[in-house]
Length: 577
Image (cartoon, rainbow, N blue to C red; front, side):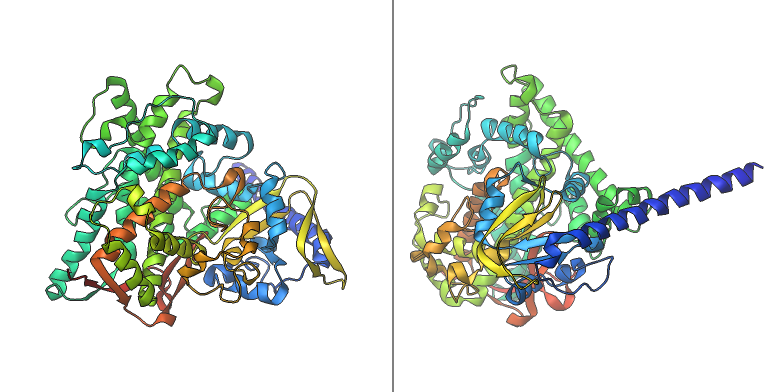
């Protein structure tokens, strides 16, 4: 009797589960078939219903540009479960989307996926929660606070920036901070002493101070981990110490995003975010991601607990940087009686900032530096010209003012970020029906010309950062070339790109632009200053064997014949004095 009842309950649960899946699939199919865009926009063929075009674009991020050439700037893509996604690099359309954040927000799927990966920080917050978190971060700890941590540990005391923190920072304070940064010096111990010497020792051990091949991506990730550890958490990860212990936070992050199976795991996580009932199933890889996220939270809680205890008793150890790291300042402000309760962050929101700092200050910066060194290895004339400018600086430890006074370094940085944006695309979801204006009318599948597109509530919009940054309509016929001198004469069309920096889409625009982009750019300048002065960089493998490999929305340069972890090998030769 009991066995029969259990059998009936099992069948009922399975039946309910299958009914939910069928209903979900039917809903997606109905929305796709009844969408007016289906009769207007061209689209690439769908390999299969389950994967849509998702696997194709993940395997080859260059496909998106090929499809744009075939179908125009605005066309229809199909994500997992063949969900319709409108991809557009039309500047008028993008400006409209960026200017209406209340209509176009991060999608629910992206929200759920990001929250499961990173928690409740600024990376995952939307609408009022995002406004509140961003308001606190900008007012209490603008980007200059982060950079204040990147001071020489053994340099002139007069060069240290003294900040009097209050709760009166506004968005205007960000531009004022940029001027204040001129008195800062940059990461002597973390950059000059660690990464440069780390690679120099590899060369010395291999060939007695001659050239040798070095896989640089892993070293750059360790370097930027040290930087964000000190600047963000007041914590020394000691990642470049060959005799140091493995770091839990870094290992968890690698398992989630850099392991051979990370793309498969991410796909499973994404599918579960699209179909929430699938979270109940022990799908392959989902447990790995959950465990890795759990380890990240454990480390984060220990860091938060340590910072909180240090703030309470004002006792700093050698790894706490006297409470001037971003997390300590955030917690100090969050505990202040001067901050209204309605603006304070919860404990989970404070914890959620750690993965946000980690991703923004570690992953994307190391990726951008990898692209920069790869580009310089392929363009020896650019590398030589840059090195001559960098060697003209009479110190190994430049201030930000001195770095900012180097025009060719600035042009190289701009061209790297334009041509090789670490983030490939972003996504938005229409929260209400809308009419999307097009600057470049399209001839639809119905044979009619369309200057506007009807957008239904719930429509997913895919914003292709790489295609915008390499548009021939903006940058001319050589848009795909790496040419820093183009910044001597920026095309007028570039002023129409929605942007917070340098007329490019890399850091987006609007309220969801990258809050730490100035930190990333300063860190990239400091890294190139030190590394290009120290090493000549040449390719270790044929040019065509290196290409973009994606992990989520981030693309890194790597050997294509082994897409899952071969890294970026280059030949390093010490620069002779």
